[in-house]
Image 1: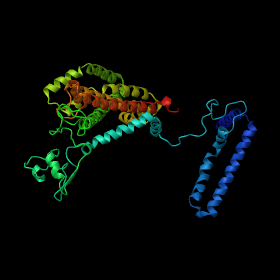
Image 2 (image 1 turned 90 degrees about the horizontal axis):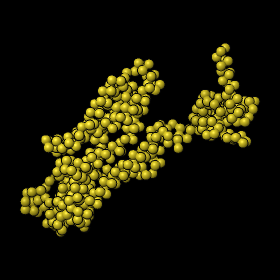
Image 3 (image 1 turned 180 degrees about the vertical axis):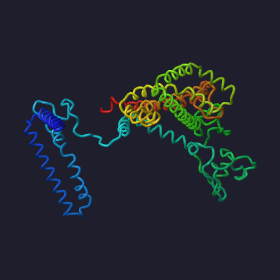
Length: 450
């Protein structure tokens, strides 16, 4: 009896709320609800009859047969939906609006996951989405650098036979030369031999590799932009366009690996600090304070003097210090989320700590991690460029944007070296910044409903 009385009281409250929101009387609300229910019952009966007497109607019969069951479970909500979408009363705000206090009658994105909604918000940001497309296109082109800029032809047909110089080294004698050394395909004699009779060769768009030196150049090095070298050459005679393509690839791949290791270490340490708290958090905080106070640049100089320069050494040294910034953000998210009800419910059900961290708290704490990625990549590219500029970066002979900037500083008259290298660096950082701003806005809950 108490349960029935409570339900009757709630029903009366809902009727009074609907009557007040729509400006109708209680009797009119009941009458409208009954009329709509009768209409739904008639529609159900007609749909069932059409299914029985016209079974060959295909998909329409299937849809009609499925609708009664759904309608039986949802018909009590129909009056609420009708009043939420009905016309406003005279002189008052309409139901379903911000002023009426009622929720929207129709969800504009039914069935969309939070990740998909964030992606749609990201796509609406034209600057960020366009930057993502341009950046991905540049990365894909740089990954195929050997097919765009290479001193070896893609395919050679000589005296009726096909050769693939990109896959195999051929001695000069194969193409009519005098030596057993690998063929220099920039040699005018070799090019003349490959153009005689029925011979031909398919060259890349830019016939220079990352370390190709054109010994047959018409101008001293560094040479200005010209027909043979579209962006000129550096102080060693290497093609500047090839250096920029391969240097961009080295920078992006280095930044991706460094970002991955930094995110992995930062998420792990931040999750441990934020979830367990107490002495564990205190010990980690003191360790981070001590570790962050160590002179990173001096350590790089010392290790560069002790060990041979390599990309692996750079990755290890920079990864040891690149996780602390993200760790603080993840720690703050875990400290906040571990107090929520769903975590308490998981603990009450006997779920283990690591399962709570991995399956419950971490998916709800990834917003700062995802937002942090583009800016972390920008910082990694700048770090590599700065170290290469100081001579502490990648080994000699590796294409590098920082080395080209150093050459531009040493050769002020060769304006093309500094101009084009600085342009590539600025464009890369701008694209990553625009992507980061758009990603931050897409994941911002305050802007989710705008």
